[in-house]
Length: 333
Image (cartoon, rainbow, N blue to C red):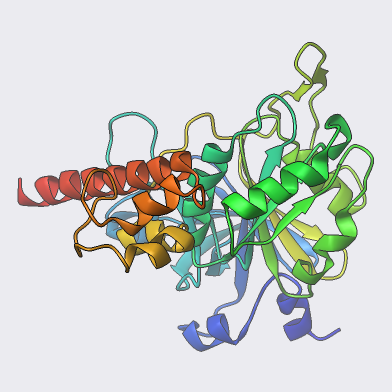
């Protein structure tokens, strides 16, 4: 295997090769600490720090290296390298930081497919899946919905059909990480050179899914809480892993609150069925709440569209507009 092929197994592609700014060696951010990083290169993991110039030029934390980024580096000492340049990102999965701060938190970059994991247990929630889906769509990667813990549900196929009907136009698969069944459906997304990212709430089984995909234990898995059947949250940081066949995977900690960070087109792209109907509304600025001649409201009345899904769409749009409003205020003041 040549060095180019070894880089390709880490996710390297012509997109990054064309963006390379110097003859410096390149690697991929595999782990991010507060003031240091781990850079993955073929057959080795390097400890790294950020060049002061890059840190001073960063306008926000979103401009600093994140897990999945390709970077150029130079030797600093015998066991440490210095990151000198961050290559452009072809995709970026972000959310708003926790609390009241209006700031972007980058979860993963340069991903091809987002595995949106939901558990078929007491925590199953269609509205939560829609919020995660909006984040995934905004990343510019391809979203795939995984319904894990099919072994805990009496009718997993029925639930899968319900999700497909409610959230059309996106792939949905049932599987069980515990019994390692249903994983053959994921093969098309695990191609050589591809990168996947796993997102979802705490305890849905992302780490166990990653272990099955890796064919070994690469992430610690929490014990199941017996009264609820929920897995305990174990992943505490984002990290890049290598899978068999030359695919890379980024595992992320479970999110207890899904704070969106996206634009209006991304919200609409996550609800293509509603957007398609909206073009037939009487008014172009229809809010789908009380206007006469609303095609979306009519579809709800006729039982063709779930009212809760419409409410979820409107809520996300309102959240997006509020964040945009606060961003404008900060720039002006």
